[in-house]
Every structure is written in C-alpha cells, then in structure tokens.
Image (cartoon, rainbow, N blue to C red):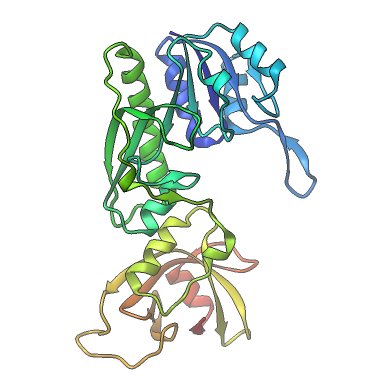
Length: 316
C-alpha cells in the first residue's frame, strides 16, 4: 500500500522497518523535530528519523499537524493509509480523514485498559498477567478508536519494561502487516468504556521505593522502571553515611513475613541477611533479594561483586 508512517521512539523503529521489508510504498515518514540532548544540548535526531535516513525515506518534522501548510503537504502525498506508532501528537480531523483508509494506530496494550503514554510500565507495576497490542482506527480522542485487530502477550514474572517493550514491538510489526493485508475485511470493535484505565506518563518521583509495600509490589516497581527511570532508595553502609542505590533487578524469595521458616522481626528496609552474593531485605510483607544494583556515581554491579565491595546496613 501507499502509506505514511508516523512515529518517534525505539518502539516505532522495528515496525517502520517491517513495513519497508514487506514492500509497502512509504511515501513519507513523520516524526518529532530534533531535540537538544546531553550536556552540550546538541540537536539530536530521534530513533525513527535515524532509521528513515538509513532507508532513504522522505522525512517530515512539522512542529504541529494542526498547521494548515503541514496538512496540505501531508494530503499531497496521497497515501492510502497512515500508520501511527508512538508519534507524540494528537492528530486533527483533517489528518485523520486524509488517507483513503484513515489512520491506524498500534497501541501497546489491550484497549481500553491502559490508554495513554506508558501502557507497558503500568501493566507491569499493576501486576497484570497479560497485555498485547491493538491495531486501532484512530479518531480525535486519546486511544478511543475502534479496534481492528489484537494480539495477546503474557507478562512473565521476570519481564522488565525493556523486555516487554521488545515483545510488543515484534507483535506490533506482525499485527500491522496482517491488518494492512486484510484491511478491506477487518471488522471494527467499539471499545468498552467500562473497562477504561489510563497509563499516565512516568515520573521520576515514582522511582523511589517505599519499603512498607510488599515484596511483590516493590519487585513490580523495579521491573516496570527498568530501563527508565530505575527504582531507587537511600542506603547507608560501613563506608558512607547515605547514598542513592539504584536497583535494576531483584527477586521475591518470600512473599510473606517469614524467613527460612521463621517469622522475622525486622522493620521494612532493614537487611535480614548480608553476605557474599546475598542481600535480603525486609519489606512491608515478604522478603526481597537484590540481584543487580548501582551505587550513585558507580557502575552497575551484580550483587556478588557489590557485597564484596560494600556492607550495607539499611535501605530507606
């Protein structure tokens, strides 16, 4: 098909490449304008722009698609369909109606659950056992369009935001290829408004661990915030008074308040056992075993190497 692609982050890159490899005629790639990045605030292209340059595809970076000139330019491409994947802008009605088949969005959840900006992380932190991708016929609302096709994905107890992101990106590529191949026979399904939840954008403040929560809930937080913004806590040691410790991975070894068959009397955040290769921490309910951590100003380390270098006394 003759199509326009609109996307910005890593999640969109594999889908753009899949459409290209499938032989679709990509007449334009829309992505966000270059942004200042790093200490030098150097203007930097987003991942989708870099991929479009590598594929020698025409690139458009309007500040807004509400602009009449931008809309005229988009319409002049005469696309049959526009595929939108984490583009970062709401599309006005003039754009939604420009292509013959309208605009199809790939959303990383089973709508109407987790409409919004961070569906992958919210699914993990909420303890969902399943998620998926939906191919949606876009309308003027935020993720409110009819569903044309869905693919389901299980969430494992070890999935991080990154690993689930990668699974869903692959499913999204499969789903949009299938949808485009069968576009004339797809049956739209109206979303059930009674099941709506919203996946608000991540905040760095959410990364702070509250040790009075259960070990299960804290582990979900750690997995959901890896690789960004990374769950963190303050810690003390025999070598320093207080520093930030980022926790990249952990494991729930006891979901209730007992340790090695006995009830323990440690307060949340206190360390139950600390030895070479072991850091077991009391929580509001259960015991968490730290596996990979990063002390402020240092490189990430597995717990064996970390316990050889430091002796932590408390997390708070």
